[in-house]
Length: 171
Ligand SMILES: [Zn+2]
Figure (cartoon, rainbow, N blue to C red):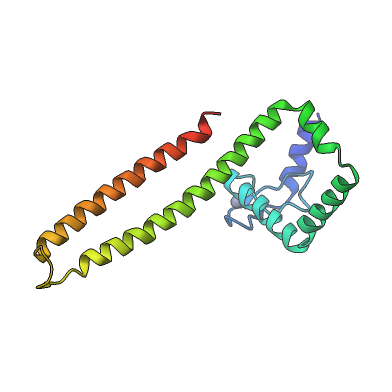
């Protein structure tokens, strides 16, 4: 009975144009006053994302305030973390792995930056080799040697990266 009654109202409610896909849809009789989007999954996803974005725009200090509140609370309860960690060994394991991964990631990206910088320097010096009467080797040979040295160095540093990557996963 209830179902039929809802259907009847739904038919009476005028169709509306979806704010996102602009197709016409029949609003749900229970929410028709506020419903602005159709029930299409993609439209619902976009609508939720918009609502979220607007909420953060309206509450800019929320995250900061929350962090301050939590920090104050933790200062007042110094045993909380110790007790929590004691009671949640799984959390401790996951957390230390997360910290390890984060640290490794930071180290890795710093190292990659350094390798890139050294690479550029090495390639530049190979590029800049010019005929020089005082040098023992001719410029082509010096360039060749430079390229071989560079490739060898590059492979060794890539191998070191693989070794560094394995450290965290052993835990
Ligand atoms: Zn839609």
